[in-house]
Structure formats: C-alpha cells, structure tokens
Length: 139
Length: 306
Ligand code: SF4
Image 1 (cartoon, rainbow over the protein chains, first blue to last red):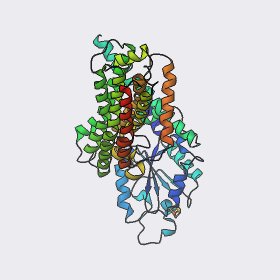
Image 2: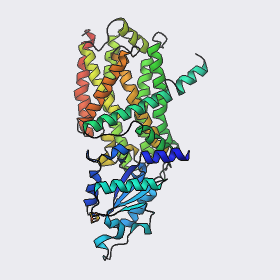
Image 3: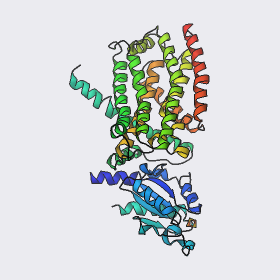
Image 4: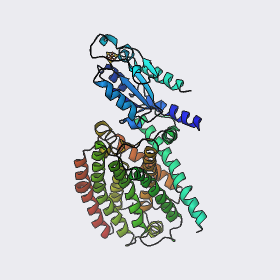
C-alpha cells in the first residue's frame, strides 16, 4: 500500500505554481518547462490550476509580510503528502532583497521546504534536477 | 439473467472496471496525440493509471461549510451512470432483439447525469469560481443538448419511428448504416461536436477554463472525489464514440468497429488540438443557431428519406 502510494506520487507529481512576489523571471523559467524543448509531461508533471489538485508547490519570489499569510494558506489548502520546492535565489536567502524592511523569509521558518533551487533565475534543467531530488527524498 | 451475471456485468465486464481501464487508456492516447501534435514526447502509457492511483491514495479535503453528502454525490453520479450506460450499450449491441421499449430514452437520460453530477458537486463545494464553472456547465449543457436531441430524433425517424435501441441497430444491420445518407452525415457531425462539448474538450471547455477560472467546477475537489470526476470523464471518452457508432454506423459487433472507433477518437483529439476556446455565449450561439439549424435541416431531410 505504502509502495503504491509512493509510486503514484513519484510518477505523477502535479505542480501548483505559487508566485509569491517574484520578479517574474523565475515564473517564466517554470513555464519554459512545459514547452516542447523540456516537456516535463514526459515524467507525468502537469501544471494544475488549483492547490487542491497539487502534489508539489513550486514557490518563487522573496517572502514578505504581504505574501506570508497567502503562502501559508496555500500550503494548508494542499492535500498532504505534498512537496514544497523553492525556485530561485530569492527563496533560498532573500537574495538582493535581504536588507529590506519588508522581507521576512526564508521560507523554512514557516513551512517545511523540501528542496531549494538556487539561481537567478535557475535554468530549466536546474529546476528539473531539483524536482527529481525532491522526489528522491521521498524514498 | 441471474443476479450474479448481472452483478458481473455491472462491476467487471462491460460495466465499471472494463470501461474504466479502457477509458483511462484512451485518455493516454489523447494526451500522447496532443503531445505529438505539439511536437513533444508526451507521457508514458501508464500515466493515467499512475494519476488515478495517486489521487485515490491522497488526502481528500472537504471545504469548510460544504455539504458533505452532495460533495461526494456529484462525483459518484457520473461514474455510476456511466457504468450502467456501458452495460446497456454492450448488452443491446450484442442482443439487439432482447431490448425493451424506450431504452434509447433511458440511455439519453444516463448521458445527462455526468454534467448534472458536475453541477451538483461544484455547487456543493462553496467556492465562487466553482459556482462560475457550474453556471457555465449548465449553460453548456442546455446548449449542446438541443442539437443532440434533434439528431437522436433524426435517427429515430430513419429507423422508422423506433425508440428501441436494439431495433435501431438491427435496422442498420439489415439495410445500410444510417451514416450513408445526407441526414446521417449531418447527424454524425452534430453528434461528434456535442460529444466534444459533453467531454468538455476544447473548443467547448469554457466551464473549466484553466487559465481564467482554474479548473472551474473541479477547483475544490481533491483525492478520491477528483479521481471519480476524472474517471467518469475517461469512461465517457470510451462510451460516447461507441454510442455514435451504434446509432449511426451499424453497431459495434464486427471487428471493423475498432477502426471506426479509432477514427472517431482521433477526430475528437484533433478537433481539440486545432481550435481555440469559445466563450460561453459563443458556444450557445454556435450550438443553437449553427448546429441546431443544421440538425433541423437534417430532420427534414430524414423525413424525405435522404
Ligand atoms: S531569484 Fe532572481 S529571477 Fe527569481 S524571482 Fe528572485 S530576483 Fe527574480
């Protein structure tokens, strides 16, 4: 039973894209993943429109006072088990926005993050590797 | 028929299990062809089964303030009605002389249940986007049902006024399939496009427009409930072309039916991939004025045996 659950989760991770105040470059790189060149549907990865359908959250952008409650909300609305993947340097260490009064990140102060993918923005290949590592962590 | 055989028919073949497995496989065909059209590689063959298994074993969240009974009744309605539909469809194709009067009407009602299930589930889930989706689903349902029913009337007229499914199939096997006439072709076009709308495929996917209302009626569904919706959609993808074949193309008791079936599936997928989405008011106009007018012409032609 546990094996079946793991297999299903690994073979069809549906991702929901949480754009938490990013500068939009990371979002564009995420959309690149769906283009014919990278085609992540080969691995069963589909971008879904509602956190209720999601197995993985791709979070982009620096966490700030406005986006914090929304991100926590989205995380709580997602059925478990779910992976959380931080895309971009902003999610890792607040990046160039660190000195700002408004920034409250990084994310794992508030929600459990499985992998961080550094890069500004990370290449699509790097994002794929990150998702693969997150899936490997499952077991 | 003994109750055990009946139960076997309903649960395993050709009812729930068989049509679910074949239907899920067809959704893979759909995704693979879509991927090839877009010059991608596409998912592996077991993808729909992995999706389904994952959804079954995931947590199911019931939104706060939602009606629990209706929230689960909605998804279940589609699967149950499609299973009964599959049993009737197969039984009447293989035993066309053993049917009852009015079974065609029962089958049309069974086909109406999945959209009603979607509307019930969406309205029960207490989400504004789901309500928008439900209202669009309702509009869409009324829009395609009119030409669809007129075309069923064409079939009835052509079979000499019979509302027994078996007699319609027999009439075609004794003479020629109804498709080989002008009104038959009209009926086939209208059936194909209303099947497209029933499946919620582009160009008629306004109810669940992912880019504007985020999966619409399904937005609050997760886990088992979502799996049931996906399953009833997959079973419809299997059963609707078979329904069209048995009404217009002489039933599916011969091996040729497999080719006919594949042709219809590929047509549906290609229409899906080469069209933009229609707004819901455009759908209504297209269905009532365009296809409705066309099917009335077809009905008149059918009276003159054309
Ligand atoms: S990591 Fe760089 S590209 Fe990504 S959101 Fe931050 S600043 Fe923009």
